[in-house]
Length: 331
Image 1 (cartoon, rainbow, N blue to C red):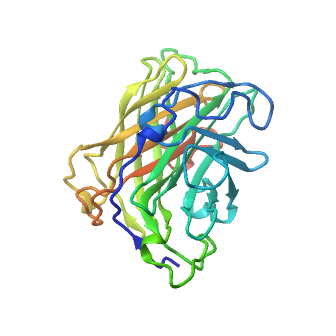
Image 2 (cartoon, one colour):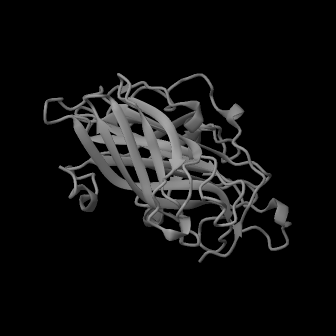
């Protein structure tokens, strides 16, 4: 039961809290559940935000986050797996942390693609805490096991589509005491001291990659603000270059074509950044993160200082990790 949405906050993403050293956001360069080496990459500061390191073990179902300060002690905080809540976050694996009833509550969403450390795979995730005390701390990561293995480019191949689910975390704070998420403070606690958890968004992702021209673009659509089930405008991952190591980065805009009439006529305002990485045999999967400085169009939900960090880990059409309903229209 959603009891209170504490928003808007006077917020800003404190990029000064990021590592700022261009390092891989994992805590070391070994694969967490196989002992195999992973490929070191640089996550752009625009999407890494406050996350300076993440260590996700998909087999043991553990997650350690570094950089999102004030979430838990020690500085490298081990988050608690909340598997029963995955369904509310687009199927992404949910981890949470809160040290006591007056400390910030942090949420992290992560996922690993199909595959092994030998055949290659990708991982990506985001973490966020919306307050209190006027500051939203958040950021994302992505990584690949193995080398970049693009599909063969011929006269009839090289264009590849990917489809799957998206989930995001926002600076909209939700206080849903009694749901087993937030620790319950004393009823007399002043409102200024009460933490909230990050309200989530969900949606679908479609990505097209042209490995002949090394370009990628995509859509995130069917977007919803989960606490109120309100529709959000679709967004576009504007075409950008695929680098030699299989990474990419670009800008996010509102989509000029909105299927929801409430957002018809919305212009292509630039609202943030995205970045990601291809992995697996023949680039069978793609993972990435986005960072938005607004997400409800022309303040359709009444938000004026909203921010969102989201994650996608999706499979190539024709593989088990892809959304079949969308991929039916792809060659």
